[in-house]
Length: 452
Image: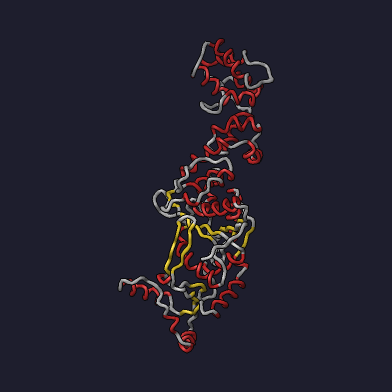
């Protein structure tokens, strides 16, 4: 096998727009996109939409939205449905070369053959009976109304490649059935369009799930049939649910849309999608650039990886706790959260999801009050009496609390809990030292003096 060699790597993500993509699909997309970025290359979104019956425009739009949300919009987008003429011409070329041949068995007949082979202890591999048909045989079958599907005649040799995840790989294609490339209705299966697009787009690297390993051997033979160099291949492990069940796009398992709507951070989803099932420790990342530096195909396990959705919830909170204001500024502004960087630095350590910031902004900016209980009224009066004039700075809170402590004779929880409840309406939350300048003297006084 010859590898494509170029200083400008080209990677692609090739989903079928037949459902919402899930976190397992995101693993493939992110690995390709981040490796392309690291190498100064190109990341292509290729929509494998040759299945007209199942492909939907709304799913194609959803895929684009999900990639944008993850922060990996493609450098270009291609649709296989726009390229059917190219595939048809290539199929005719393979026919002329004797590599694509017509076969007329029905699915029922093929299943019967496979059953008989299994009963004899043989692998259920297609027996190439169609190659023995004469022109007269084919004419008779077509006169009966049969239309052929078209199979690629494999070389029946050992195909080898150096896999970016799995290391040296070998597949003896004599153990495989000649794959159907064109259905009886003239539509194309995945295999041929994929190879032709990779050739046409100059794809140098294909990173995809390990369920494609056998496909890779077949595709390498098709690359060779067209006299084209094959890209480098890497096959990553797959995610399963905690139950051990595989992820399903059709069943909507862990779709990116659902994860987004639940308030999870894209960086948390990206970190989990890339790092779970590797020797890299799972933890929050401050940026995609940070995550890019941690991508290591050789660190990916060969075993399936169990993906626990709860890990994303925890990782979302940990991610928010370290994000700088610049990373969230536009999102805060779009939801009506003010206060700028001082507010963000004050509250980020107490957020489980970004929507919580809006709740804290209502605490800071709202006019609601939480009257103190009767036994705490003297404490509120002392706090109001000793509240210093503005402007306030980082040292204001400490000086104020020291004065209130002396005047009230209270300390510890008896001092801090009633003040926190009066100023925020909550038992816990951001440090009052950071909130005080954001609240301002007028609001603080109104809350200290509130009466039931």
